Amino acid sequence: VEALGLLERLENCWSIYRPHSELSRLNSQNSVRQYGISDDVCELILAGMEAYQWTNGGFDITSGSLTDAWGFSRQKARKPDPGEIEEALQRVGTSQIELD
Image (cartoon, rainbow, N blue to C red; front, side, top):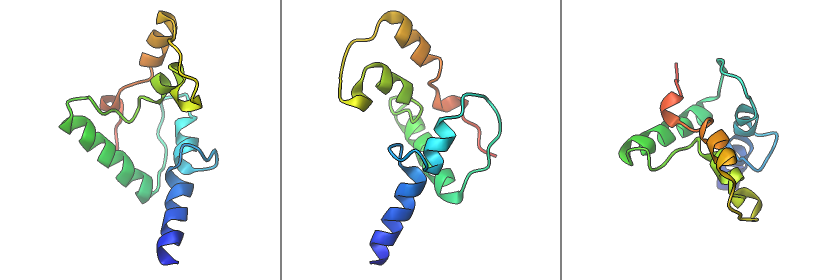
């Protein structure tokens, strides 16, 4: 029961499929500004940043816009046009994340 409670807490914090989760709310922000985040989200972002470094950018936690452009998040894969790809790439870049 304790493990299920922990999973539920993390899903409510980290899930991109739950619009009310802290991570979904953070991802929905379109401006560059400071946000207060929980320790759980901070740990998740730090782990993603480490994976980004370990893979020399091959793993990027900010690639959701590319996933959306290619239709993978909706399970309707398609080839986006070059303009859509360029627009999505403008929102990608773990190296641009700053944690204070």
